[in-house]
Image (cartoon, rainbow, N blue to C red; front, side, top):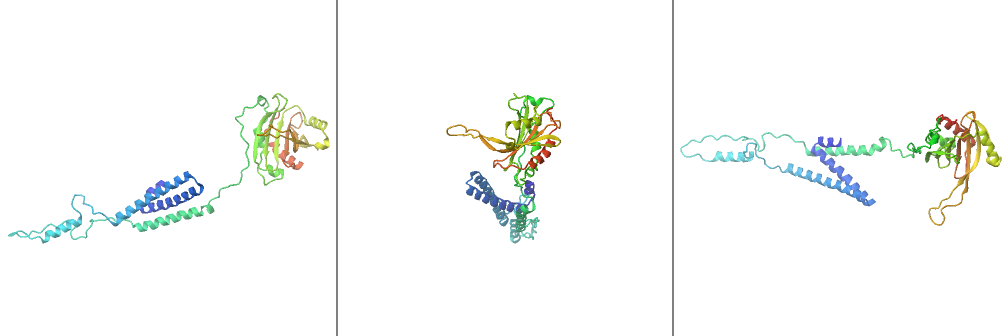
Length: 356
């Protein structure tokens, strides 16, 4: 489009525009290069300045040619009109030979007319074209000046994290069984909801990371699928996993009671989406790794408290569960109702693939 305009515009419109644009860009780029000590920008600015100098030289030559036109010979080789008129005038005053009558000399072409070509095509006024060029340049400058107010501004708002793709990852053999377990990617897509922060009670936050993994349960020799998804915010981290074993939610509740103090774990049995469920609390584990100095790592420490909602895979509670866990670095936890609201939104979005 720019090349077409440059070919269509007259000389006295095109050249002032190129000079104005080249000078503005060259000076601006040179200033930025000096300010930022950028050699690449300096080279680009120098190119624009050299380009502008060439255009100025062409305009100066064109102005000189218009002010001092050189006499041009006619197409048939005859001298210019002024020379022909002078020769004809000398022939008029020259005396004729004795005894002969003076014969009228043929009038040269163009005699009696003012010097110059017989017909001169009217050329456009360069000053008018220059004024038009300045007007066009002013219009372009006004458009560029008003563009930020008219055009939609760039949206610099941080975007929520999207689930990392693991489609090319080789799934463990257990994921090929029928019916096939849900994958970590599918759990992540279900968990990473636009309203997840609002459900957690922190509506102003956005997800900083989201990922899914296709794991297998520990101590099962890869025979039990345990996919997992994790979405992190500034305040909370939410983890969703699915375990396809034979342990029912009721059996799991008994094991938790046997393993520790029921009051300490804050156990609560309930029903979620028509399925048996269990709310429990457990401290996370904290690992410290040293990348330098003596010792490669520190002892395992007790991390912040986490709250987990375990929901059976099916209403009959034939084994396996979805586990929704929330924790924070500060140790603060959302309400139990927040976990229930998240489960009621997220679990129906998981593809209906039960491990049973």
